[in-house]
Image 1 (tube, rainbow, N blue to C red):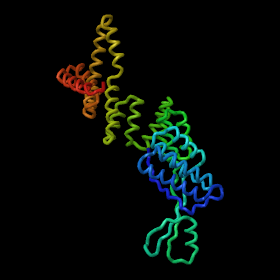
Image 2 (image 1 turned 45 degrees about the horizontal axis):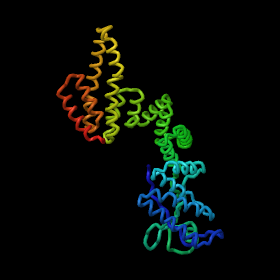
Image 3 (image 1 turned 60 degrees about the vertical axis):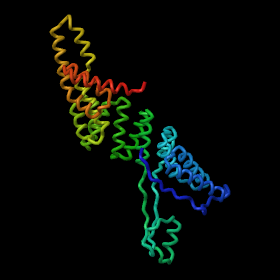
Image 4 (image 1 turned 120 degrees about the horizontal axis):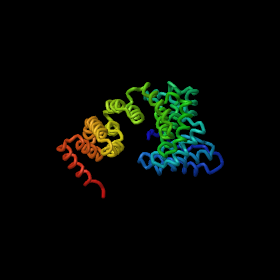
Length: 343
């Protein structure tokens, strides 16, 4: 989950609330809630920060000073606290409200120090209009929209919650606004695959690879979808800094090379008596597949020597290819790893 650097300023004691509540009491409560939220966030205590950010938002809203940035911070904190339901609710509300987070920043340069000073709009206007020569170089700048981040984060939350149809609808809505968003395109592929729409998923993968042929994850996914060794090999070539993906790619190379071995054994056993010649052909074909899988299995073991499946698969391949010494070595490694498994 992407973390953002919070830039929340403590609200001034001069904050104007109108007559709904006593201004001093509300402002004290507002500053206290804001400080608690900020301190909790900085301490990575997101479960505490989230409701406090919402409290700040509700206090300001009830007194005519609504600012959805605090709602945004609450949603981010809920997401970081793995409170998926609350995070989904807030991010959905923010997107449906049209929130972008775009703000205008006001600055001026202090003549004495030469430093650029951030100012609120009223102060900036007053200084600019005054005859004071203490400040110069008055500038305004708009902050970047966070709307793409809202779509990206909510898509991830929905996919992780297995709300795949909702995720796909949201992603397509986001892509209508941001058609070149790489993350949404990637998430679209995940959503299509999760919803069983493999044809569109395949089309999406090919489109992504045409734009970025160096994406190891997309090559891996293409290999899974098409069971093609060349795609897994390409993924490994590009995933030098991704050991998990490399491990999975080698594993799939082994299984793709072996094919449906249980079915092959069943066919061999069924033909042993009725058609021994055909059974022999199937046995030889099986050996050939195991020989093909052997270098991939050895690479898988080299990449993940503590992975039990890598060890047991390599041991079985050594047995079939009649390398008993190596099979015994893997058997010893298997026993070692099984002893470490929780009882």
